[in-house]
Image (cartoon, rainbow, N blue to C red; front, top):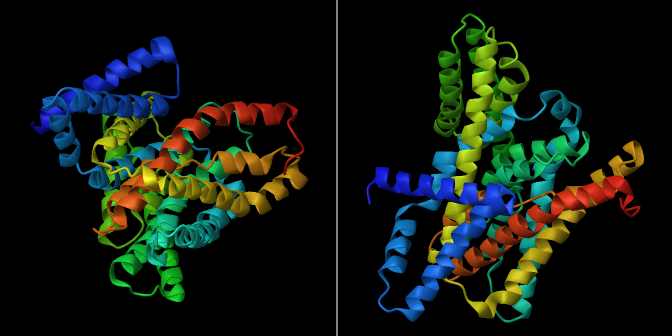
Length: 417
């Protein structure tokens, strides 16, 4: 199939599934798209078993393999999605919670990586599966950052307080940059046996994250200044598109964090740039355009994630590792956010703050894209299957129950920290 045929097929599926969901199911769009992708894959799998040879399964499977999921997410969608997400976040609230956001996005990611990696390594040894420490740490690194795309979807329901919401959103927008550095180090350790150097890794995190932040804010400020001089809605929208992709690409060329640069540019434009536009029509066009981009790319992303069932080598004998990985991810998240949960509980009387921060820390497609980028090894398939299980649980179970949990806690749930 050609690129235009693939695009037509994906857009058609998104439209049909979106209409059915809006008309009958009324689920979270991410859950609907993920479920549709997995359901379609399972239907074709059953057809492959019952009707041999079944052309549909082989053709769709080949199409999924042809679309490199890692490149599609990391190099194609992520910059636009982070920029669109940043536009929707209140910059003033992010500034107020900056200490909580930055500690969770840095120290929190590192602590979670260690807890999950060491825990999975120990359990794998105990059950006789022999997963090397380097590969367990690689899993911990790719699964520890919360996913900005999944978190933004959950936040749209408006059930989280103005104190905790910005923390979850800000952390999700900025921890990918830190997570990428930690994952790259862990993946190199798994592939070559090169022992990580903590001081070098810390310096790289500071340089890449800080540089990406400065690049994103600077570029957005320049674009905002230029847009104040004109009154042309089409040019203004085009400028934001150029800004989103430009800072992401420039950050990669400068060896800085592209995710942080895109998120920072979106935050600045949403908090300062768009409001400063001379044109009311321009402000409206920018908001509507990026909302459409956000929704469309999210739908495509979760549909493609569900279709990854075609390329995953599931081994049911490893289900104990899947459950262990999930338990460790949730436990590490609770341990990492507990200090800030206690702070918000005592200082601001935020009931159940730790539970909200734990259950709202969703994992998503970015984690799976990183898992697919791991080098070929007998252990790669194990890490892939654990990652997919955790991501699906996070999107479906946590994503569907997060809003009811948050509402219950705000109405007067248990006296949890």
